[in-house]
Length: 177
Image (cartoon, rainbow, N blue to C red):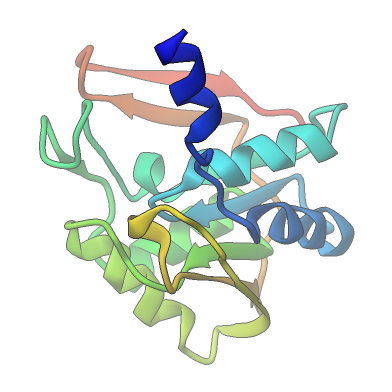
C-alpha cells in the first residue's frame, strides 16, 4: 500500500513546448525531414510520432548525426561533424528545411554549440520561440527555437546512415522521398 500511495503522491515529470514545436514543424515544413538537437529529444520525437501517424516525416537528431555515443555522452564518443560547413552538408544531403533546438546546449560536445552558433548566421531565420515549462531541473528555463534554413536543398540521400558506437557498426535505414 505504501508503494501505491507513493506513486500517487508524487508529481509526474513533465515538460511543455515539445508538442507545440512538433505541431509547428508539421504545419510549416515542406520537407520529409526535420532536424532536432536537444537533451530532451524523446519528447519531441514522441509528439512528432503522435501527430504524424502515417510516419511521413523523419526526425533527424543531432546526437546521432553530429555526434554519437554509447549510453552516455562520453562513452565511445564519435564526432561526425566539425564545422558549420559539415553541418550544412548534412542539412543539404537530408533536405532539412526546419531545425529545432533547445536554446541551452546541455551536450558536453563542442559540435552541438557550433550548431547553435551556425543557426544565428545569415543562412537561417528564427521563426518561432517556444518556452518550456517543466518540473525537471535539467529543463528549467529552457526554450525551443525553430529555425528555417534559407537555402534548403532537395533530399538527395537514399538512406539515413547512423553510426552505432556501442555495437561498432554503421547502419543504413532506407529513406522514402
